[in-house]
Length: 79
Image 1 (cartoon, rainbow, N blue to C red):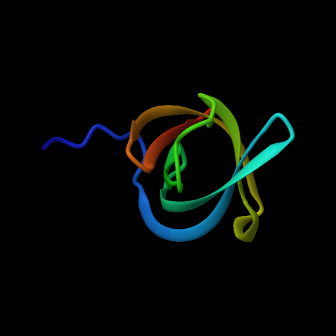
Image 2: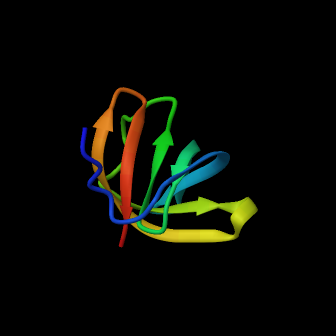
Image 3: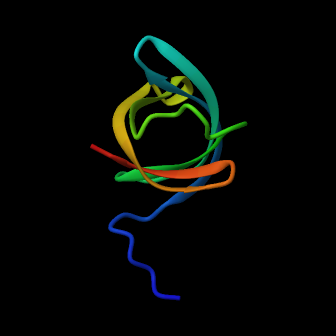
């Protein structure tokens, strides 16, 4: 399979928060690059297409949008 990513992704296992409208949903960041991330959640229900991803250990706070969803995982691109 050909790789079409713009930036190399790095496997990680970090706690994150999907933040939107004053609410937050916990997630696990499974991989991370300069342009996006793969997230694992307990349930993909009620997560909007656009939100802010917060990774406290990296002091990262990035607005993003979902580019794919599959069961309990989703890929996001940073805006």
